Image 1 (cartoon, rainbow, N blue to C red):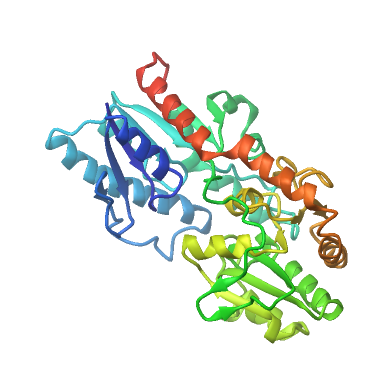
Image 2 (tube, rainbow, N blue to C red):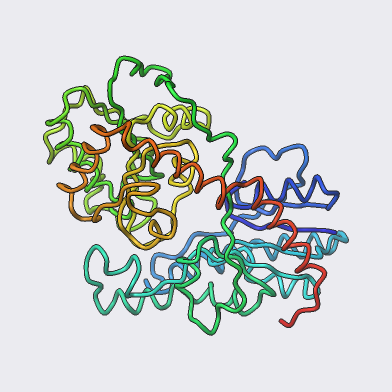
Length: 403
């Protein structure tokens, strides 16, 4: 069977299942905007929009135009592939960002599976959680779903990584969605008791307490301002506590600050922090990121009601003692006092208290670490979920379906 995966990045959510399907003898191709080297087991094709979104574009339509430009770029590559004799039996595309928008026109006989992370709403999720939306925000947010809805209408089937994320879609449209997490490597992210912190240029082997925080960016969506305020309070109360923050000084989700300021700069300017015990690692390769988790005394994960990060599950898999926000995506996985500790997203005093409580009672909370690991292995192990996803894709490719 010929399978074409489409994602602006690589390997993203499709790398492990693409590799497994290749190992099973399927002809796997990956279409992407990513410019790195392809692994030897994979054929990779590149697409690139011929221009950027126009500045004069109506602001409601900027995201939609970006999706259209990606879809157009992929379609142009697709027509050339078709002329060369390539026609996939199955196309799997990350929906909303555009690469799959026109696959039905290029390959009308191919089965099409969409990967649906999020449906935008002006209430009950990310929008309105940090600040009330304006009327203009509400109109723009509704329009963001245009490309997502086109993909949902065109696909034979869809995947959503969590029940919370699937619940954001209109009830009448959820019939096409299977809830299936991407999975984490629970064998790689496994506890190693007594592990010492070891990163190039940062020796914390002397540190009695290491508080860790991981996020792609430093932004309100992942509670960075709240975490920093709590870390300042914890440092005052615990002179041996070091804080390690993994991530880039940018905004991955949500709005940037005006004037080019970053949230890291803002927090460092506003808070009284001991910089000798506050360590920003930047983005880390996978092996060093793992070292951070294994050496963690307490791991902090905060998110508004939005897409759940893989990093939280990986931290649980590594046996971290988790202090997390009491928000919908987290509550799907974490039960307070059983496999982690939950705290109100906005209550930085309570967050500091729970971090200190966890540090004080590290032995008492050992069952929480074990339960966190058990949750990750039983519900989110890639060794089980990736073969399930591969089988689902094979079934969709062979099934008689409408659409």
